Length: 329
Image (cartoon, rainbow, N blue to C red):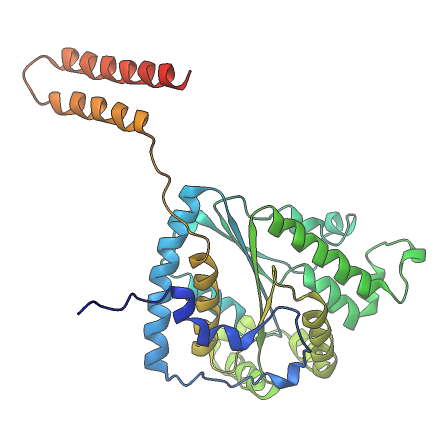
């Protein structure tokens, strides 16, 4: 009796991705997404999925790097203490750091303020074969600047261009930019870590009560917490206007960090699984060259002076290269 073929990874992980993905089709209301969702899992089951996702991610990252065709851009947004830092650390545990870069976008510098609002992000986009992680991103320019209009005033935009349409225009610019990236081989996944106000309170208290976490706390966090409803409204607007099929938002339940990591890791693995990543295949001419070099290396162990053996290897390599060039012409 033949075994049923195993389902593709993307299909297996769909229950942890599809319910939280918004691609712009249909209406979007942030309150419709629970912050304490567990997806029918407990911590033990979630840890097994998370560990499997790490293995898959490590494998895909190596092939992504070797193939050197696609790049992956991951955007993390969320309120303070939503779990962005710890999610990145946990999900990418064991992944080769040479193929990943994390960029945190904080208050703009003087240099950055002298450029357009997308400039600082454009300078650190991932190369082909790499994974770029934005811990906060250019979306802050539609979020913080909207909640705090005085920050927008610091951006030195000509006053005539700062109209009531500026946020719609920025949404349009961002969507066009992301469409451009997607058309050039960058896969974009965006994650909004949707934490409740009550859970944020508990995490702030944890930071205050534990000396090892005191450094994470800032009085500015409390100032921003007082603007919770405003931030939620703006986040809803961002997701509603910038979700597309090529750059979807994932509204991640973040009250339980372990489940948030399952959702994020599953979304990343699913996206990479669809790219048909593989190690570059060596052509026939190169295989023949490799065989000659291999034989020469093996012959090093046989009789003859060290100098003579080295000459043999050098001659074999030179002959292989010459043969390869002749076949290409």
